[in-house]
Image (tube, rainbow, N blue to C red; front, side, top):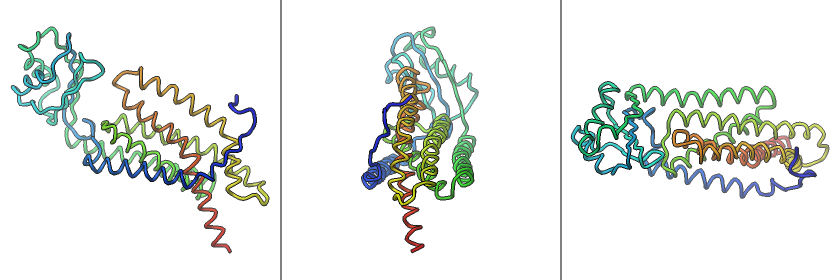
Length: 301
């Protein structure tokens, strides 16, 4: 199955300066956003604390709920709607007591403002500060180990410069997605780390398809310029790239709008990652190969 009836002849390499400028600008905006917010907004998984999800029969007033929580010393907790106006999510910095006790204590503090049977404690999660720190470190290590494994695999299958090009593209994808999370003021949790690892795998798969075609065409390039070989390779795989990315994106968009609040941030990360990963396999990884080969040629002269 193909989108184009014949091989396209788009000059992607002619747009490399514009693409690199755009990428640098987007990454810079993301970094500035993270700096302004004082870092990423960590969820309970990494920051520690307690998360409580409440369901009300009728939409509650957040200020009334906050007033009720003040009676048990939790008035400054973060309270937000979750999925619908009948659901509230409470984020408490402290992580004291047993889960059942916390849920019961919060529910009791609201009785009087609301009928007991109209309040349901649907979920209580607790993570201690030390556990949160450990999870944060392990999440970073999981991404680092994934990148090291990718370097070894691509260096073995292709050449070292291909591995470096792929890693630069992956770092680009992670930074852009992380910046998008900061701009959207979304929480960084273990689920999002899983999304980032998924993005790394997806983007790498797309990049390797392009690299395979570049390697094939390099063997028979003759006097053809490198940038023309890479242009031809990208055009030859363009139908496959658009079909794969398009169908994946359709599923992710459906999850984003219809999958519910629980996987909303996960699908948001994948949606950004699929778009950016497709872009980087064309304009970041391939452009770096042109740069690397050009420098190697100059050194030999």
